[in-house]
Structure formats: C-alpha cells, structure tokens
Image 1 (cartoon, rainbow, N blue to C red):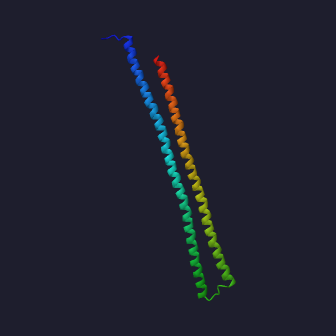
Image 2 (image 1 turned 120 degrees about the vertical axis):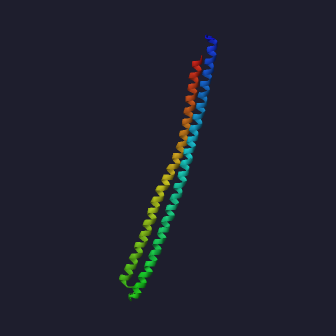
Image 3 (image 1 turned 60 degrees about the vertical axis):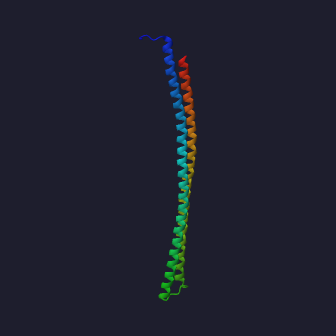
Length: 168
C-alpha cells in the first residue's frame, strides 16, 4: 500500500522520537559515568605518584645519611693512616703543625657531611613539595570530573527538553 495516513506517520515519528530520547538518555548516563570514572582514575594515579614521591624523599634522606657515614668512616681511616705515617717518620702527633693538619682534615670531613645533609634536606623537601602537588592534582581531578558529570546531566536534560518540545 503506497499511502500512509497521518496517524500512522505520527505513530512512527513517536517511535523514532522515543528511540532518540532513549539514545540521549543512554549517552548522558555514559557521559556521567565516564566523567566520574576518569576523575577517579586520575585521582588514583596522582595518589600513587604522591606515595612514590614521598618514598623517594625518604630514600634521598637515607642515601645522604649513608654517604655521610661513609665520609666519616673514610675520615677515620685517613686519620689513622696519617697518625701511623707520622709515627713512622718519627713525628709527634701533638706537634702544632701536625695537629693543625689533623684538625683541618677533621673540619673538612665534617663540612662535607654537613653539605651532604643539607643537600639531601633540600632535595627531599623539593620532592615532598612535588608529592603535595600530586595530592592537589588528584583532588582537582575528582572535582573536575564531578563538574563534567554535572555538565553532562545538564546537557542531557536540555536535549531531552528539546526533543520533548519538538514532539508536540
């Protein structure tokens, strides 16, 4: 049959309109879920990075302590060698020039240790700041995802309203 009546056309148009509204609803739901899941994933990634950076900061401190301890052990060994050599050549370790030499070597060793500890403190502090920034990045990601989800809901409601008004 070649002719279609108005009521049959309206009926088919209603079905098409209903399927558009269903697709729009599904799309809106998917956009909301996707936005929130994306935010959660970025927050989890930022939290992982934050923990890694905090761990790195602790390791930097431990490495500096280890280097400082090695430097002091090297100093002790060098002092023992210097005293043994002084005794070998018959020099009195209490001699003013020998004592000045040994005191200066001790001063240098402790300056090295202080420099190692200061450098580690600065490096560790910078790493901790990066860790804090990761925490903020994670919180911002989840907030952004909530805004994106709200935007998707608003857009979906607007489109629903447009389709609904076009129906009448």
